[in-house]
Every structure is written in C-alpha cells, then in structure tokens.
Length: 249
Image (cartoon, rainbow, N blue to C red):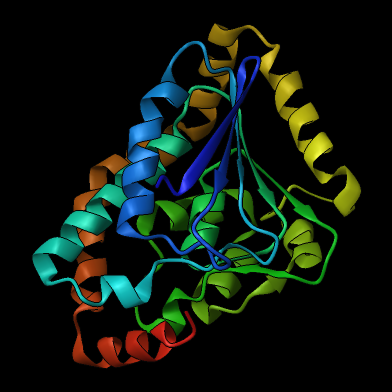
C-alpha cells in the first residue's frame, strides 16, 4: 500500500504522508516519493503541497528499520533519500509543506526542501536533532538552513539540536507563516495557487537564480558529505545513540 496519498486539484498536486502516527521515513516511503517525482516534475503540475499528520508531520528516519541495514544497504538508502530531497528542492514550480504536527529530524529535513513552510498556530516543535544522536545534518539541509536564517540562528539550531516551537521557527525564518488550524489548508493552497499563476518560464528562471549557490555547493560536495554521514552512522558510539533513539518509535 502506498505511504503517500495523492490528490490532484486542477494544476496542483497535494501529497499526504500516510505511514502512521509518526510518519517515519522508511525505505518504502522514499520509494513512493521516487515513483511520484516524475509526475511532480511534469509541465502539467504547476505546484506541490505536502502534508503530514496531525501529531507528527514526520518524526524522521525510521530508525528501527534502518538500523537493521548493513553499510552497503544503508548507503544505498541514504543516497536515494538525499536524491529525493534534492529533486524536491529543485522542482521547477512552487512547493509548500503544511505542518500540523511535530516536524523533527528527517521530518524537518523533508519540510525544508519545499519553498514555503506554513504551520499551525500551536506549541508543537520543529528542529534538527541529528547532533544529539551522533550524525551530521544532511549537507543539503545544512545549506538550506544557512540560506534562510541568520548565521547565529543556524549555528544554534545545528550545533545544539534543540527543537523550537513553530512560533520561534517563524521568528527566525525556518517557518514562513503560522496560521490558525481552521485556515491552514486554505492559506497554503491560496499561496501556491497564486504563485502557480505566474509565467512558468519566468518562475523557473527566478527559482533557479534563488537556489543557484546551494545547487552548486551541493553538487560539488555531496558525495564526500554523504560519506561523512554514513561513516558517523556506523561508529559504535553513534550506534548506541541511534539504538536508544529508536525506542521512541
């Protein structure tokens, strides 16, 4: 059964993560994303909105599953996940994450790949706690964080691994807007619909200009940076941290 449901509304595509309360990022979820991407990249699609769950947008990588993989298989998974993230980040159309539940670790990684993040007005949290479980924040995500928030706030988020409430995320630029629950979906769709009305070639040119530096750095360094992630993942001390964290799933 697909872990991502698809709703087509005129020229917009709405994707909903549908893999349980915590929406963990599993092998199958990444495969489902990979299968959907050609449709998202097609000219017929003019905008994409991604939704998570009410309790968790996504809790992050499915640690109980991924800890069973050997180094070769984990490398293959992470390379595929990283590629999916890059393709979402570089989609030649406006994209939005609609965040009702906690978006943490790999869930925050996924949300940061879209152009906009609209979140519910709540005390739920957003953040990248990778340093606390012994692995680096994925390189593309780190580049995005540094691009959308101040150097001080980027350093604090990446070095401490602390989560922030959505209101604080909005203050520092990680989240674009917080909206009352009853208006969240409508506001998100309204924003993407407005952007989708722009001349397609013009929007693509503007977006490519906006993300050009990130793309250049990512493509130059991704292989080395991804290997650093894998090397850390298999360090004995990190395996202990990851095993402890996996018990929360």
